[in-house]
Image (cartoon, rainbow, N blue to C red; front, top):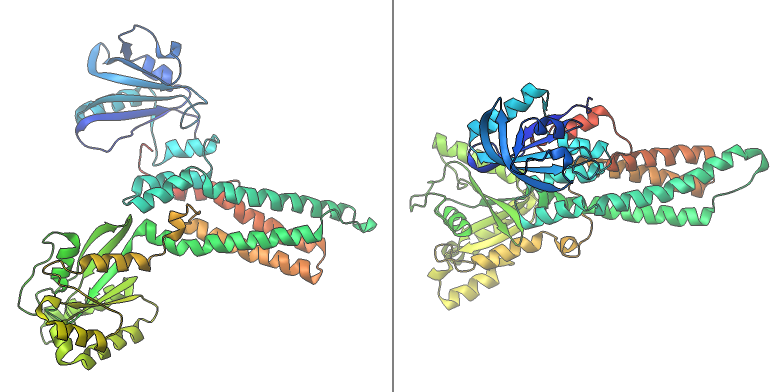
Length: 462
């Protein structure tokens, strides 16, 4: 992987806008820009201090391309650890391309996706988990996902892993030293302290592994399937949750024949609501396809909202309870919220009657918005965000999760070997494997293929 040349890319979103930022990084970044920047101060950028901004014009063979602001960041005090120049120009796509093409002709290379952050990692400005958090931060679309990404960028996760890795490495060194004096039968590593360390590592690893369930929800959102028979108000509920007319509402049963999806943020957590076709026996081919898709979406959902019409429950609560049991039996692992809709059509006596007949139910009127807030709060309670509120480390990255599982497996082998009286050379093998998986997370252990896979998911310019 070549990272000694000077790269250039558009750092802001592509397209027209008020301004655009073009970023260069590399040994010749300042030199290249100096050759085409005419500062109002008449000074060269190479003569300026780092972290300064300068007004002037970008010139191409005496042709003035734009009036710009140029920011200078000299190595090693820059994002990438190299000389970095950022050119803020007007946001015309023509101007952007003219400036980028100018520096490509001058000898720059177009940056690959995530190459600026990759260089930051290679130059020791970020560890690998922090670098991955940059992509998560850019992709964050809720308060919770933003908070987790910021926490990881500040190094909370990697510092915890690095600390454990260092302690384990110290003990590993002592055990390796014992192997050199095996004939003298001496012990340099205190076995009781080593066992305490292993117990602490196992506790931390299990906590981090368990946090992935919450972290995955925070990062990717919670898919919620709204299911029920036709014409019970599923589309009206979706519109009420989104506070807009997203789905067609009609008195005609079977109006929704395909799934409709949209997202909202509740308490900082993103929920993706899926309005599904009403479940019933039908000979309509199109509606049948919609019902089949309903069951596919229920399979994909993490939460099911079962909606029924309260008047039907007043007439036949046994039928509703049977339908609820069917869903519970078919999807026993999925949280289920039972919602009675059109409560505004009931008398007070009927409300009491239905509450006694159906357990753990929320009564709402989707049309009037009554009870919808109670529903959203119930959804939020299903998602354990306590760790987020307490600023605990939360794992959101599948690669980290996989490495933690493998590290835990190796640490448990080490503990078993220690308790079984295995020889130091066998224990050392398992310790080395655990250290390897710790290193995979922070980047002490990496290869070009791994880095290529990670940074390929970044946008160009970052």
